[in-house]
Amino acid sequence: MLKKLSETPSQTAGPFLHIGCTPAAIDINVFRYEIGLAPFGDISFDDVINIKGRIFDGNNEPVLDAMIETWQCDSNGNYFGYQGFARKATDFETGEYFIKTIKPDSNNDNKGSQISSYISFWIVARGMNRPLITRMYFDKKGLENNKIFKGFNIKKRLNTLLPQTKDNKNFIFDIHLQGKKETIFFEF
Image (cartoon, rainbow, N blue to C red; front, side, top):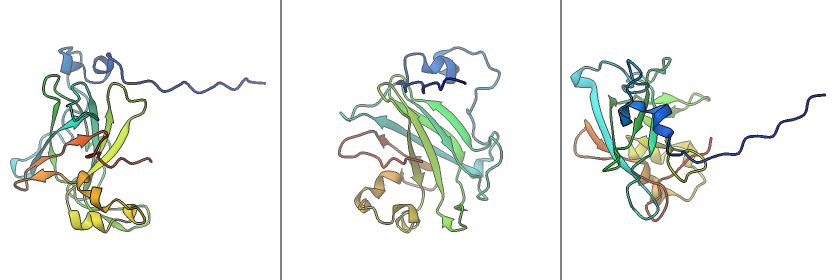
């Protein structure tokens, strides 16, 4: 009879996170192409959108050593292989991240209902025992009608899932890990 093994306990993202996941961020250039550097490879200038932001801790201080991964569909609402995946480290001095990508189209959930366009964010950083998952939506009206949020008293916090923007090409999406401005996080 085989002995049942216990699950390995969760650990925080430690000081060696970047060596394994984003080595170029610390000037270790072992790969010809950094994994997740560009979600869609070559993008025409007309299709490019820029997303930047910072991740803030509970004291409203930027987290200088976080890593984010994003996942999104393409401009037709489709997912193809690894396309749409990005992995970025926050800047070690400013805490800022930057993603050059395309605006995703809306897509359908597993029941065929349309979901407004979004980009999923997966975040790890020092002191976090588990990754956090959130989304950046592009349409407030679609967000308010999204079935995911029905039954929750979070209407006042839905803005934490919307980027700031001055035009349709440049977006600022700050993520607050806790505190008064805490971003809505999902558990899937």
